[in-house]
Structure formats: C-alpha cells, structure tokens
Image (cartoon, rainbow, N blue to C red; front, side, top):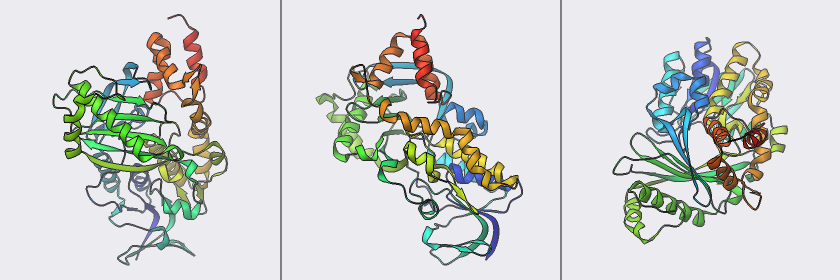
Amino acid sequence: MTQFNVLIVGAGPAGSFAAELLARGGAKVALFDGRPEGEPKPCGGGVTAKALKAWPQLLNAVGRTITELDLYSPSSKRLHLQLEEPFAIYSRIAFDGYLRDRARDAGAHVISQKISARKIKRTDSGWRLKSDSSAEWSGAFLIGADGANSGIAKMLAGPLPPSDMEVAFGYRAPLPANNAAPTVVAFLPGWVGYAWAFPRPDHMSFGIATTQDAFAHEPLDDLLWRFMIGYYQQCEGEKVKFWQVNSDGTRIHEHLRATSERYAARIPGLAATTWDSRKVCGDAWALLGDAAGFADPVTGEGIYYALRSAELFGKAYLTGAPSSYEQRWREDFGADLLRAAQMRRRFYGNFWGAPFTERMIEFARGHRGVKRVLGDLVAGEQGYVDLKKKLLKSALRPV
C-alpha cells in the first residue's frame, strides 16, 4: 500500500488543478479519476474571460473562443454583445483531460479508480482509501473534489437540502449545416433560470439550468426542445421566437430526436444561510469546487471557482497552514457567492411589472452603459456585490 501526502478524489478541474499545484510544490499526490473513459461531465463547458486571464494555459486546451453572444429576454427580445473579453467553450472530455494530463506531468499519480465515500476510513496517520477491486492507498490529507453529489462532502460537512441544489439538463446535438452557430443565452419565460446554446468544436451543447425546487421535467424538456428547434430555424434564416415554434420545425425535431444525446446533472446553488454556516475544511480534509458548493447560485457557473479554490488550497497547504483555506476562500470570492445567493430570487423575479431579466435586456438595448455592464457580467469581471449599483449608475448616465 503506497503512502501519499495528499489523496484527491475526483479528477475534474478542481481536483486536477490542485494535484498539479501540490505536485509542483513537492507533495506526493494521488489523484483518483473514477469517471469511465470517454464519458463527458454534463456541463455547458463555458469558461469565463476572468478564468482565462487568471490561467492563460487553459487556452491550450482544445475549445472554441467566443467573441460574440446573443442574450434573449423571456419574450425573445435580442441583445447582441460584442465581447471585449472573450470567453471559451470546451468539450469537458478535452478540458478535463488537458488538466489531468498537466497534473500527471507535474508528478501526480493519476489512478483510474472510483472511490466511494463508504470505503474511506480515518486512521491514526490520516486516511485509507479502498477501491471496489480491494486495492488500497493511504495518505495524510484527504481532498474531496468529487462533484455536486460528493459523498465525501456528505460524510465530512453534512448533506445539503434540495433547496441548495440546482438542476442542469440538456442535449449534445449536431452543429448547424451551414456552420453558422451563434452562442446564445436565453432567459426562460415563466421559470427561474435560462437556456443556452453553446457551439463546441464538433457539436452543439444545449441546456437549461434551473433551481431544483422549480424543476419539472416534462414542461422544461418541452421548453428546451422549442428552444433547440427555434435555434436551428434561426440558423437557417427564419424569423422565429424561440418559445413559439411553428409547424415547420417538424423536420428539425425528427432529425434532433435521431441524432442528439441527453445529459443531466445537479449543480450547487447554496442559499445565503448555508454560506454563513458551512465549513469546507477541517482536520486533515478539505473540499474543492462543486463538492464545496462553489458555483454561482444565479448562473450555475462553477469552473472559475473550481480552479480558484484549488489554487487557494494549494497555497494554504504548501505554506504549512491548510486550515487557512477556509479564511482564504471567504475573503477571495465568498462575498460574491453570498451576494449571488441573496439576489437569486430577485434576479429572476419581477421588476416594474415584468421579469427583471426582461427589463435588464430592454434597458441594455437602449443604453450602451448598461450593455457594457452586462458584457462584464458575462465575462466574469462584474460581480454581484455592486451589480445593482453599477446598473443604476450606468442607466442614469446620458446615452
């Protein structure tokens, strides 16, 4: 049985990046990747400009850089954004594989074994892990980076209620025939959340993100199909509203039914009271990324927080103070996640007799300053702490 300094369960962005940083710092690291080979994580795959600027090496992964984005209100009003700060869209197979390879090149031991929380035991010297094949490993420190359904998080920090979770589901589908594939985010009519259409290098990623307590499969799936059909119709030059597909969509619907692949996943969407009380590290253990609950409660975006939490933990561990990780993440991005949790209902609620998302896009269509703030929000450069103040300040300035 091999002894390690750090055992990391989960080889997504958080786990792989932590393994790379710790290994480069001299730690002996085991990174456990339990996902079947070639199976992608259910995810839109968007990486914000903020993340790309913080870690420019991410641009070496195979993806598509996005410089334009179409935002749609619930009534299908369109706002075209020319992004000053481009973001990227990746296949999660390519993106996660790139980060895992970097961890291996840095000296981390990548082990293709699924580790269940029920087979993790505390010992006098740290932790012991056992796989289904009865192989065993031991280490002084345990990191849970095993996603939103983290068994390690449930064991060490306690389970989260359904109200602290969100749902994302969608379809991987062919690129439009003419390869004119705009990047689209459309706020849902009558529901909390949004739909997306993200063109990847070899396919489209469509999806809807909403709160778990608002989730209803059949009506939301129907809404997503109307969105998908409307997207392809627009790519073919038709003037349609996403949520009101006409009979001409039958051909597209039949083609997508034969060629698309469905996926679904849970996403953390922690409430404000949970952020105040939940701990993500303790005696010889820590949680990273989705396992820690680090995702934007408004948008569900989590890749930036996965990478940043790995970086903050790496610094804490390599300076001999792993317990300082709790204070580091709270000071770094905790306020923004807390503020997002506080404003989630208002963001998707009503404002002046219409959904706030409707009003926000209406204002941005007529005001460059508001439009610029929305562009910064998409890029990840504009946080929620001062979002309302920035929007009001921009709206009051002359056009």
